[in-house]
Amino acid sequence: MSDHAITPGARFVDPAVLARVGNLEFVARTVVDGVINGLHRSPFFGASVDFAEHRGYVPGDDIRRVDWKVFARTDRYFLKEFEADSNANFSVLLDVSRSMAFGARLSKLDYAKTLAACLTYLVHQQRDRVGLVTFDSEVVEFVPPSAKHLDVVLHTIDRAKAERPGQIGPPLKKLAEHFGRRGIVVVISDFYAEPNEIFEGIGPIRFRGNDVILFHVLDPMEIEFSFPEPASFEDLESGDQMPIVPDALAEQYRALIKAHIAELSARATAQRVDYMLLNTSMPLDHALFQYLSIRDRLTRTR
Image 1 (cartoon, rainbow, N blue to C red):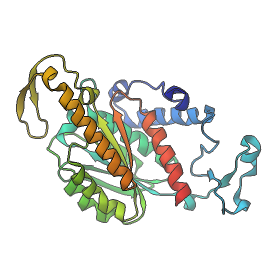
Image 2 (image 1 turned 60 degrees about the vertical axis):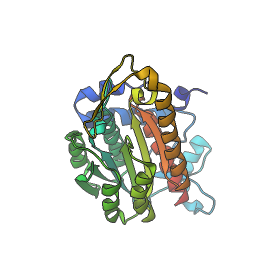
Image 3 (image 1 turned 90 degrees about the vertical axis):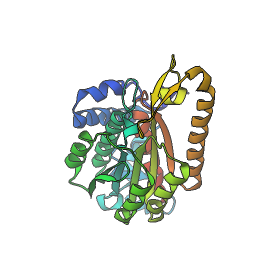
Image 4 (image 1 turned 45 degrees about the vertical axis):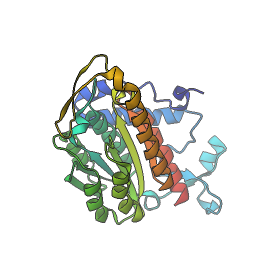
């Protein structure tokens, strides 16, 4: 079965084109509406597209809350869920360190900003409270979760710039105290740090009862290292430059990046953290469907 069959929104416009539109709210609304319409048409998802109003039946639930009209249409059990049952705090932690400025066609930061806007708009439609943190080596901007903060979050995302070197551990540890109320925390980053530092930063947030989702954003060139000619490469974090002959290092580089991705995935699984690798050529619906799948699972297990 192809990815296109599973994710009916996979035909969405190239992320590089979306990033040039210049209106994050319009882009987010367009992408999210496409995902919702895709869910309506998809045989792989149930009728629970009014996410804040229904959830799947779990043994032990009160059958008086079963929506029998939905059952008549779908032959599946869904519960009527009131707003107080499903509202959650949702925060995006967006990496704005200098390395996020890299991109052959589209910078990682522009992709991450568009993804953050789409996720925020989506969960706002679910009536969740939305918040945002931008960080590099420290917290740059902090918008606490609120049902009234969609416009503030989108405006803050829009003006984010990748200007300074980053260090993921310290700002995440500092933020843990702000996430004492259980919620969903999404970290969007290129995760150019040692896995120990990353998960030591995430650990205190997870320990306070939050569900953590990692979206690992890389440019395709960073994954494939398919640079055609020798050149001087600059470390975007330190500014150091080094002459590189790609053919001589490509195999070693690919092995290192593959090992880094595998370790992040394994550590995330071990610590009950959700992890997804995205490259900047990937349509945004992949990430949105991943989030919806995770959210559905979290709702069922809470």
